[in-house]
Image 1: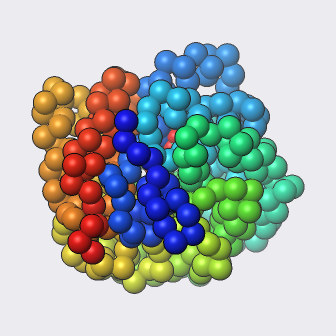
Image 2: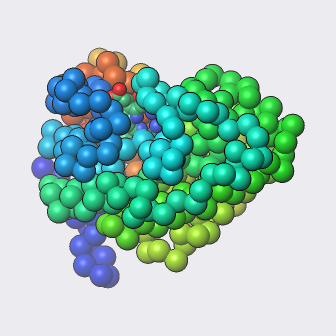
Length: 358
Ligand code: CP3
């Protein structure tokens, strides 16, 4: 097994946190988006007895599901088991999961937007804060815990459309037809997610990630005017915390110029753009996270290793790469392929440690 810690001035630091801070690491750390979930038989077993919302709102169960993949695999980070819509549900937005989020009364008017209350974490999401405390006191190997939230524009998409969609037509039309009301809703969401993430860090989350799952719906101008403006507001409110901040932009290759200006430690990216090109645009002051196609886990073992090597070569030898998939793992993935992926990333990078020359 590979050593799990890398030294730093303030004592040993887990490789994941060192990589977020662009410090040298003894091997490339890896975690997997949606690592707790339906591809794991132990998750499906629990889920057959408890519905998804109850899982997210019962700290003992949410902590158990968070830890399931950590017991099975040598992952370098845990991610809180919850959903991007959970804090909105806590704020009183009525919604169901089927399995994607369905908002009972989509937000379409200024009056509805103005009625959205601010988020008060201990009142609205006490179960999330308690889950974080439970995970921190039970996590194996001192693995760090990532807290997360949806980025404001991605939450906006679900709130305005009311359900998952390919095009999110109503949400995008709203940006053009009611730009002031749209920005009001985005500001409210930005402030709510800032309060939510701050509370997660105070409860023990050691890194914070914002998921912009629908970045790729927008052209560069609208992305800057709406999505980026709002997420910058969230990030600015979190900068006084001493935890790395991660921004994941799905289908965001064409937006990396704009993302380069964001005050964030790590940028996560999908598999459609090579990491070398992404790093070139983002510059040396940001770490990158990604970006193996989730479909690659269906390759033969020797081919999977080859696909992983391509991602590692693209990431290069400068410090600041966290290996991940380019988007969430698919529910029909074989867990043994995940174990092979993690082993290969650790073993091949331990022979060629990252950032030694920097
Ligand atoms: O392991 C982890 O990554 C932590 C758990 C997690 C879930 N949702 C659990 C979940 C995280 C980080 C999320 C984030 C999330 N939720 C995003 C952003 C990341 C991304 O994938 O782009 C988005 C867009 C959602 C909205 C959402 N929630 C969808 C579209 C769905 C249904 C389909 C799907 O992909 O699973 C959900 C429900 C959901 N969230 C499930 C899980 C495990 C499935 C619920 C079930 O067990 O039936």
